[in-house]
Length: 179
Image 1 (cartoon, one colour):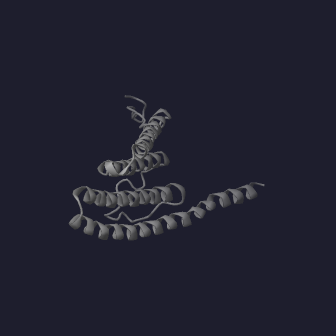
Image 2 (spheres, rainbow, N blue to C red):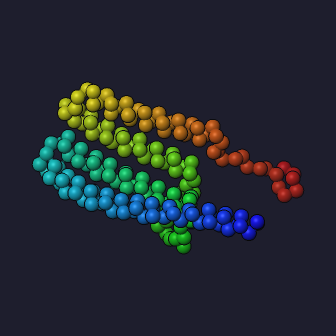
Image 3 (cartoon, helix red, strand yellow):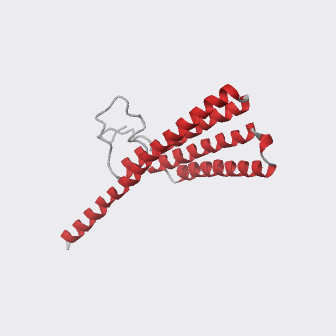
């Protein structure tokens, strides 16, 4: 019976590899975002040289927006893969991000909501730059959605702190138990 239990547990443990295609799909999505970024960049050139300053700002904010989404995907890929599938062995590559390998599920949630709030803020700024092109009703909903995301982020952080994801206090005792 113990042998069957071990095989079942090994099968369950190895099922984590079913997530790998999801991360490969997210890598492909970054490639698609690169295409979208290139298209937006070419359009931004035309806007910057031929449009108003407000239109130029919107074009640049669009580039920033796409970049933030790509960064978010990269964080999700690295942290998700390392948390749920396997550690990424880079042989201490000099370009390895400092946070890689140290982002737990709780940290990932906070980075995710923080990125979403930043993206939402950029979208809100785009609305404000073109305030005359939108109705008050549209602006109201954009602000409500942004504030909801901000509130959600604060609540995630608060719940995380209350649930005990804090750094434990260091022991001041040596091996003998003396201070």
